[in-house]
Image: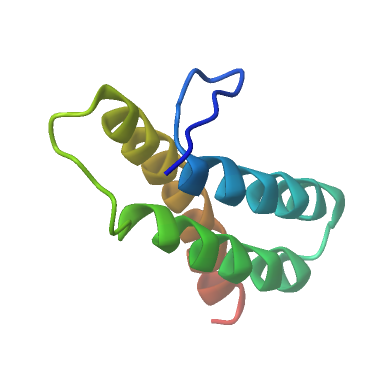
Length: 91
């Protein structure tokens, strides 16, 4: 697999591809005021993040993989918070 490096310093094509998708979703979450709209985009964010979390190329000895998992974990927490906020709003 050909590796690339972004500003985060993570050399991985899987990460780079997913980062592009994440960068398309995050502004939509930030733009919308409605928790219902935010949750819709957060569900999409979760799909993209799960691709990173379940990466078939994961190497437990790679710093790039460790950093990727950390970034993915932070995005997962964001998506979880938004989705849980929707659940609370519907009570």
